[in-house]
Image (cartoon, rainbow, N blue to C red; front, side, top):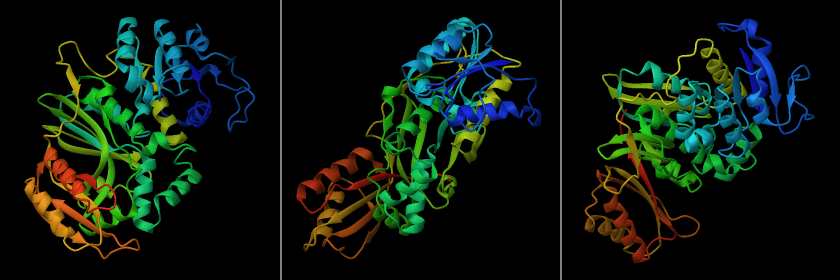
Length: 424
């Protein structure tokens, strides 16, 4: 199997290292590197690439007749990565990629092109690193009617929130540590905004529900506004706040979103700390299964890429998202305000008589019933933190209550609303 590797960052170098020690792996045949490409040939790298044919242009490598499988590790949803992958598919080459943004944005088009050319488009490494969730969903759970797929799909965010709670340190302080450890980029926006997890959630949803992937319908909220106060109050009430990505099959179609959620302490995902990823698949007759492991890093991701390469020794050409012609193609739809759930609401009330009564009265007037309420002493600014756990109610009702609360002028900052997940 002759592969061309475009992109020689951490994952690309990790893949080369695996090729160089493949005698210790369980591959079904020999892998040879027919060529490599990256932005800079002279850059110092942890592996020796001197013996490999160098290509200045990734698309030229993708079309080279000596390449059987084009491995795209460049990154980015457009530009050179997209052009090179399209070039490889049009040239009748199998493609393996770790590029979640590319698949989330252009997956339908690329899958159709791969089907037209009767080649495979594989992207196990694009979701959850070393956890083989794409193959599990597409192949192993083909006999399961999946109703929901959810999980912790960004190790950076999970490290930040769990470390903040465990150590009592600020968001900014823990983010700096995550950057020093290599969990977060110098510009962490893609991670902490939830966009990285959203790309992965969209891909998993498309596979799980035979859905027409439409990333524009994915709702995304990150952890930038989650503070230590939120984490601590939720913990005292028996919840852990995690950034959860999910896809849910509804009568209208597939709702896909990423947002911080408050999980009950016994929830399987509440116990996932540090930089680990975890995916929970629910369906009939399976029930639920949870897969957990390292979701990023050169080793786990390169391992997933090599797993896809190994699969191509015996290619079984099928739709990249596992959808057959007889499947009903579910649409992606926007999440609505009619969803019913318990909610965690955190506010900071002004230090005036009657503000707590005004809060509870506003909730009651909108039909929101309080399950638990926790009020802390006023902080150094004179504001009093209050956490409320509601009974199940439509999201629109609690949003109306929040609007009423803000109009009363009894809060010192925007209230924080987090959906509560109670499933085990």
